[in-house]
Picture 1 (spheres, rainbow, N blue to C red):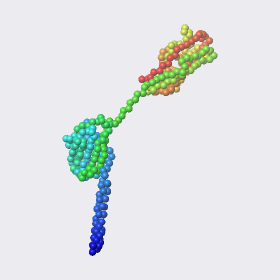
Picture 2 (picture 1 turned 120 degrees about the vertical axis):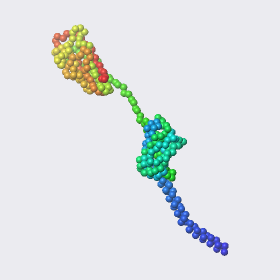
Picture 3 (picture 1 turned 60 degrees about the horizontal axis):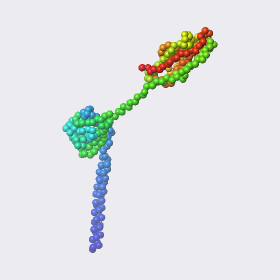
Picture 4 (picture 1 turned 90 degrees about the vertical axis):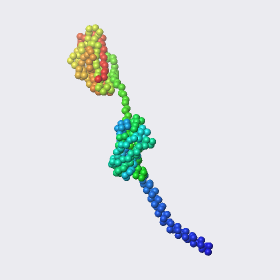
Length: 322
């Protein structure tokens, strides 16, 4: 009898377990569904919005694009940084698509909560929040750009969306630099030796000037002399007068050509006499790099030219144009 009773109990337990198994399975499946549902309800990240203050503090304007649809009585929670102080007494607020707003200010957490009393926030809707008395102070000089946090919750308090709105105070950088003005004039030879002159030929020597300047309006070169090519007495070699120094004639002058420079009209054709006072010989209207001016000195004599040693001092100067 004892053995028989033991087997009967085991049989009853098996039967009870078989009956309970479907119930356990359903509970497990429901629990798994709730778990999966909770995972699917994870809050969505908003694209960065904008935050602006019309003054210090002035009116607060926040814009963002809503991601997840929110039902009536949903909350928008705005959390401001330490540079801003929430106005505890503030009441004014508008939100796109809603005419009824309940506003709560929390100066401890530095937050403003806006409860949507009518309407909903549609998914992908462009939202603009305006608070004429949102802040009591705002300091613009601490950060070039900074953010305040946006969180939305449905009527049951479940997080829907989260993100930031950015304010730009002064994120531009002014870079300054100075370029020094320069001008230089180089000459390859300062001693021009025409040698012993002859009635049968023209004696000539070329001198090259090189010009560099970063002056935007260019440079001007002038030429000057201390007088005639003379022997220190009253004897001179006559200055050329017909644009060409000719062998067998007593004539002296210069021919000028330039590269990267404009030769003045007085000197850009043939042979010309040197001036006895400063005279423009070449110029540019813009900056110049390695411009050159070749000055060729030419002399010839006639049979009546007085013998002697002749000289002349020629000076060429450069100056920047205004």
